[in-house]
Amino acid sequence: MRHLVRTSIVASVVLVVAGGSIAWRLGQRKDPLADWRTALVKRGGVVAAISATGTVEPEEVVDVGAQVLGAITGLGKDDSGRQINYDSVVEEGMVLARIDDSLYVADVDTAKAAVLQAQANQVSAEANVQQMQAKLVQAEQDWNRAQKLGPSEALAPSAYDQYQSNYGVAKANVGVAKAAVEQAKAALAAAQAGLVRAQKNLQYCTITSPVKGVIIDRRVNIGQTVVSSLNAPSLFLIAKDLTRIQVWVSVNEADIGSVHQGMPATFTVDAFPGQVFHGQIGRIRLNATMTQNVVTYTVEVNTDNADGKLLPYLTANVQFITGSRENVLTVPNTALHWQPPGQEGQRAEARGPRAEVKGRAPGKAGQRPGAGGQKAEGRRKKPEPGSQEAEGNGQERGTVWVAEERGLKPVQVTVGLTDGAQTEVRAADLQEGMQVVVGEKHPGAAGAAGGPASGGASPFIPQIGRGRGGGR
Image 1 (cartoon, one colour):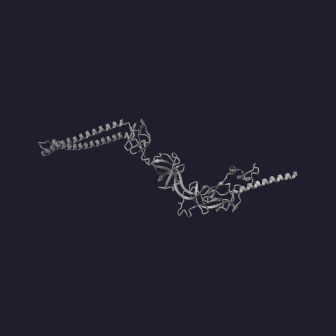
Image 2: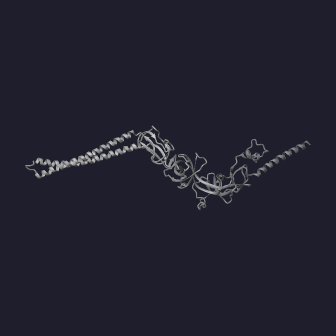
Image 3: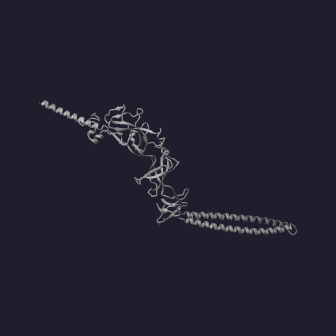
């Protein structure tokens, strides 16, 4: 009797263990793809863009400097009566600053005196001409009378020669006097030019705005000495119109071929998070720069700043839109790179975290089916989507793996635009809502999330010292 009881107990335990194991395995069969990470095929828009950084710059800036040296004695005032400072709105001709003009006033007075002296010298020279001309007339008459008398007893030969000499000297003196007049005129012109120069230097002591605009930088204070040498010192930086602003973007040489004048661009600044600004490429500068063997070109993006939000010298994160598509099927980029590990036959039984795979990805051995022999992202140059060239041989192809109840199925797709995260794909066998595999779940992750039933081993078998898949 005791033997029969033991036999019944053992049989009951065996049945319970076997039934539990069978139930666990049936539960596992309900979701054979639980170990794959999947993503849905979605329909939406894709925008391909090139990312770069730049600096917000005023469209036109005037650097106001000083042409004379001296100490700053005062600053001007704007229309509101405030002292000229940062962000002051100035009009053309408005006083910005004043330099000590005492030395330049003295120079003007000296130049005026020189002009007066030159004018007096000119008057004296002209009067001397008249005097010399009068002497010439007298000498000419004496010479004419001497010629009538001739050398005779009435006129000694020496006197005759003297009259002739006096006439020649008088004629020469007239010429010298006229030359002195021209010299006096030249001296007067030089004195007048010196006066103009002194007056200009005196005017330069009052620094005025050459344009209408906004002061974005003031680099001088009252009492500071300005020294003007070969280069005029910069005192004020004036932006002519802050309603029109530019973003100077440094574009890598690998991407410069994809941008062109008139291309739309979007950018953001940290000062206004979440707000996207729009612009358009105005000019691509040809003076490339090289930094650490990297060649970059400066691209000017013009944008409207009528609301005045954008301030000069903000850092901008710019995207140049190279292409866009709407209402297309998209998959994550990782789905184009992933392939089932160790699949060699036409059909393979799922072991461990692997599910059954239907078919084999076409291509050479060792080739990544997800890439199709080509990169699925990072493309910069490609035919415009929808064009005849795009529909021809220039398209890239790839493979995605669709998750089904019985396993995985490879689907050949034509790869289109990518935004770095999602890629446009086209295939007859691909529909919105399908699940494509993007990777494998981490070992033990399913068990941690869903309990023992999601793990890789039977809950009725001790797990101490056992590895992944020990129950299979």
